[in-house]
Image 1 (cartoon, rainbow, N blue to C red):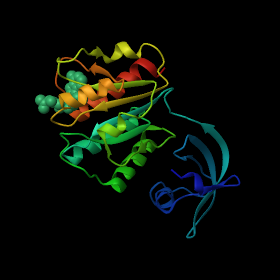
Image 2: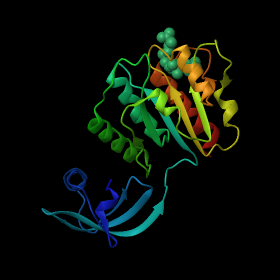
Image 3: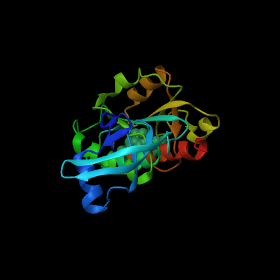
Image 4: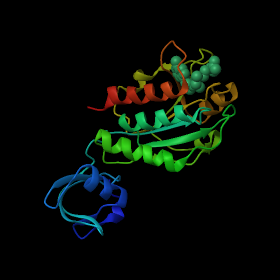
Length: 233
Ligand code: SAM
């Protein structure tokens, strides 16, 4: 991975950690061809030409756009979870499932207000490289639920496990290409009924992910999987 600012005039200089990995772990030498993604949709085939103590540089031989990216733009708002490890599992798997942006939500029943953004970013980068994507999902700072309700998207869904509201099975809403979508998932204690009503008033559709009560991170990943299965082909 090399961010866009590492590219100049057909050359790229690898960031220090990637240069170290390329030379010390993968044992690359001048003349080797490698693939580098820039996190904003660029996939680049390079020939390494300078490998020394000053760093690693390569000449760009070929560039493609949006390799490994789905044909829709899915944002998932998942409430920050009590156990950071569960939220981090979600982050890694969300990248693999093609999620474009992640909003850590602060809801009435959210018990945590912080997460470790630097650690989260490292997880996202590792997952992007591992699964062959070219875009690094955008990770927002935590945002209040009521504010996110104003975010625009062609399809806006609130995942709700209680049968107290009329709910669509999620796949019924994914029969046609959606373009961009925003899906909200509540914390361990769920959304309050007031939050569900607020979301409906703001134009969100309430969706079910089946008859079982899923853990929040499972629910978010099931929603992302539904998009992948219904729309990514
Ligand atoms: N309120 C519940 C409780 O504590 O008994 C559980 C909330 S659930 C663990 C966390 C979130 O996952 C919910 O707010 C909802 O967004 C989502 N969720 C879980 N199971 C779901 C299902 N079957 N259908 C739709 N959403 C679900």
